[in-house]
Length: 320
Image (cartoon, rainbow, N blue to C red; front, side):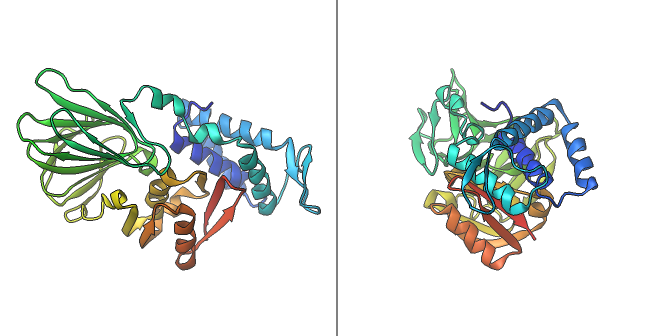
């Protein structure tokens, strides 16, 4: 069972795929060592990825016969063989613990599974919708209205004014003072949080920010894990909650953010081999969340990306 965050686990596996593709250069190997040295969490994720790869070494797909054979594959293998090995892992379910940390669900007040949306009504009549693979706690106490989004994405519709309504999402606190709706999204790359408000305003507070960020009605803001404002769009809230209708609407959106939005709806693992390239590639699309594989194939028809199916549980995306 992995103790690493999903983002770090995915990044570590992407490094391992590149390094074993037969195309890695010394600069990439140095980059991997530098990445592992960033923190103890990075090192742990790398160790888990290497352990998974070691498991893959005990079974491989014979390039001539196409059959799954016992024993280790050659040290230097082609991209096709890398993906063949990943197909074996997908078939055997070796990567599943990284994707489905079911233990977290047990302690949550409300949770959703893969491709599941759930609607809730809180004691103060606030309406809540949870996106797929989300975890949510209600922390109401005497005279306070507070909730915690532990994972995933949620829409919160405040129907009664009064005492401030507070949403905790990681270190970020989203404060609502008037009736209206807000979308809080933790399904973002690199620990980012996106907040969108439609018909109200919100105050965003973070322990590493000296001042609160005031987000006006119709606005969308993306904050980094350190509280830095990474992006702000005055009219960006329009499509933020399209997931409630089973859609992901992208307007000049980084591919990395789209992949993060598709993952909770996918019953397999979606891995990007180059996160920097995925961040740089901007996308305009209307995608069907109920068919993540079809969404990826649709993007591949119009974008410089290639998809590699690695068995029923894994898709690898390469930006060309």
